[in-house]
Length: 252
Image (cartoon, rainbow, N blue to C red; front, side, top):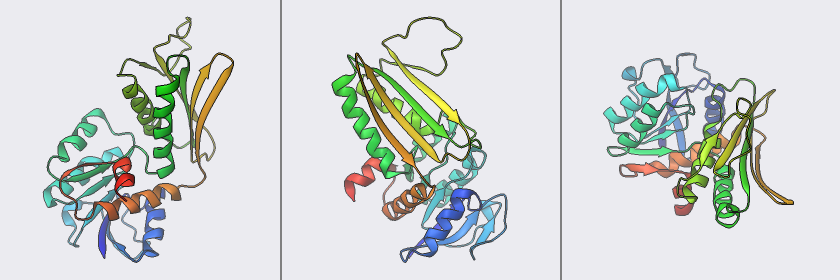
């Protein structure tokens, strides 16, 4: 049995993970970490990681950037593998993710959906074939409670496309303030917020008389929870290093 510390356990994603974990015979949520210490799933919830006494094998962090530093410090101090699922991290926090991977096993993915990571691979392939003749735009849609924009997933898609083009492209987030034609070296990234949209991402390749769109639509948050649990099982017993969804898919 793999013992999990669930950071952000009383958030929406935390509750879904707790529900799925209770039905899984391979893992157990041994403790939770949250500013809200109400226990809804039978495990103890702490508001300070220093007080956690349970044996922990893997940490799943699906919380808030404000809680990231403390949970990462706990992971480093205890030398525990951590799954970083929290979005909206600052550059300094992302640098911390990379540095921490030199000391402990760190799994980081901007999106925990296996489907999204397939979309990224398809977008990279399309970029190789189309980029010289097609303009590339990324449109992401999320619910009206999402704080960060554009989404971490949209940025991850853009980064992977840009890498295929030797990082020669510029990301453009807003065009209303500049009246000029679109530059060929642009990747447009657009954020839409409304209602209860779980998460939709479209990568649009627009050419002369032809449009190709690669799309992914998440209909519930459970797809992200399933990915996080798979990652926790995958990371159990791993040596220090940086891991991601693509690496996990290749090895499973």
